[in-house]
Length: 153
Image (cartoon, rainbow, N blue to C red; front, side, top):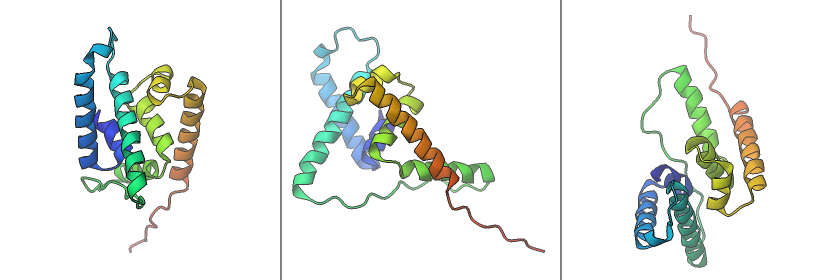
């Protein structure tokens, strides 16, 4: 839940607030579950809609500044870590729609139909967005500017 909230908000403290608001809303509406075996989809739907409501309210009052990508918690010292940083950096440059689809399908492992319900989209749209998100991520990683290594004698 926190992982999805961080993708939605791009800010750890706002993500924690979103998770708290989501769980509060879920507890007050627990009677609506009606025997669903997996509550993750229901909780992700609540988080998604709360985030949309939050940004709609904010949009009326302020202009939104450019978001800064989250900082890495630990410096990488090896080549695989540098490649991973390229992927993380490219992921931060994807559009909000593409990031949401990638997290829900690839990270959380939800099925297309469940993601379609969460985001209130047709299944075909989820599939095409996922395909475009993967292509965009691949393109961003392939065209990433890599540091040039010097030869030291």
